[in-house]
Length: 254
Ligand code: 6PG
Image (cartoon, rainbow, N blue to C red; front, side):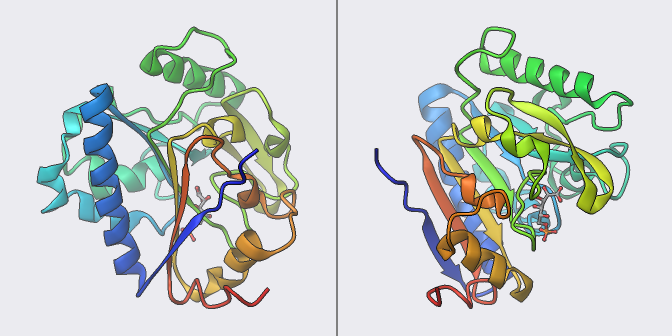
């Protein structure tokens, strides 16, 4: 079995990380559209990707991307309404989806404001099955995203896969609700079966407060229950970490 070695690119700062991600996304979009006529991506939540989304909504990236051919999903969502400042959808809409006027039929947000998150997660799986042309119901083959964007939490979490939470142990479902006691909050998240089936996964990591978790995730002993980002290893895809100097400061010290 081939062990996937992640590529780690060291960049000057958060702006450079965002620009490198914009270039990579544009390249992947063109390649996917040329081969499959569609580019299917899952957006990251949190604050780090905001600058990337803003950049994509302006030149040169805005004009170079065939937005009509995109299907935009989300890696995770907080249990808040879509107009809430805490909503990952809200951030992406304000920074990019709104400014580029992406048709609503191309944007598939997680309805994590619903009272029943189990139903919301099943609905999201049904949407993925429809958009990816997969048989309804949890088939063997999860959806294969062209690109999944992820962030890295200070505790080593990614998407809403937090340390020692139930969603870490999901081996079949594509999207699940996840109770996160550390945040005293409910979340919805894509699962490892989907993340690890992607053609490319990009982690955006910036700032000195990410130096320790990044070095533990990449170079520390395997402990995916404590460091859920360690288990993101696409089985037949590429794994790329775009990290700024501050976040990469502790690499090579293990
Ligand atoms: C979320 C995210 C989460 C995020 C990390 C990093 O909804 O919070 O999906 O996984 O990527 O917490 O967040 P920052 O980029 O804000 O540091």
